Length: 102
Picture 1 (tube, one colour):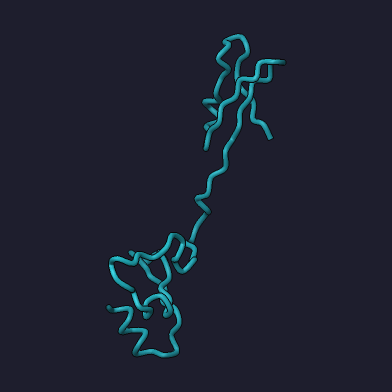
Picture 2 (cartoon, helix red, strand yellow):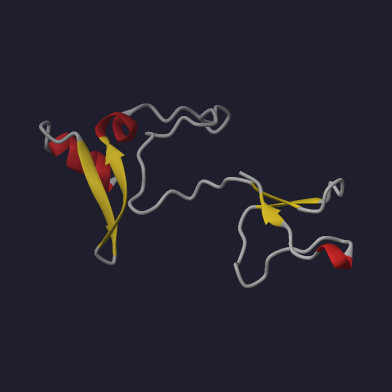
């Protein structure tokens, strides 16, 4: 309600930066705030947000593939992250640590 009132009172305003404890956390746009919200039976489709991005680094992930370097082994492990102090090891003890595949 407060955002809608602000947009209605300021026709020149197209977006408002939302802050929490002095940090930017999002953006409200005139189009989204003043649009017809529909009814509870008509939810917004997936991805129907304003497509704004938050400040900071992307939180997207990539898959990191580790494989055994021993010829013919074929042992692999997938991770979304890893700590260089705890590299995964092959299931065959004598093969040792797995290596990152690029």
